[in-house]
Amino acid sequence: MENDEKVFGVLAYIGILWLVPLLAGKTEFSRFHANQGLVLFIAEIAVSIVAGIITLIPIIGWIIGLLLWAVDIFWLVLMIMGIINACQGQQKELPLIGKIRILK
Image 1 (cartoon, rainbow, N blue to C red):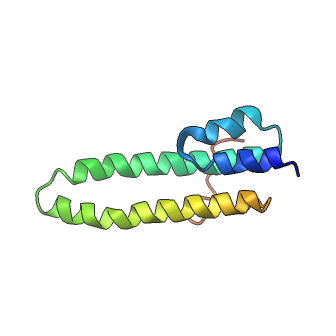
Image 2: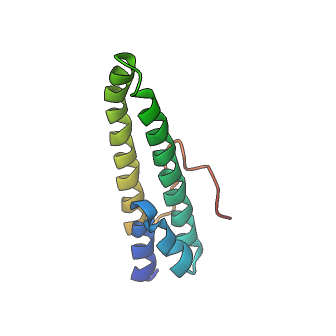
């Protein structure tokens, strides 16, 4: 496997940069990691929007907002797992979101 493909795989997990392996990568490996990165990105945005709305509720929203920090740490862990897998040239699915396929 070429180093370029590993770099594309790593970039897939850094926010909007999932577009790089989608557009520049030409292998199944790049596409796999682009999909994983896209799903992670969408999940992060969806949870952030819901959290933003919930935290507007006095007291209960603030408590839930504090609990959502744990969710942020979870996203970070998934991102690191994806980057490690890409660096090792592996196509392992991420926990919870790995089976979701948006890109075919």
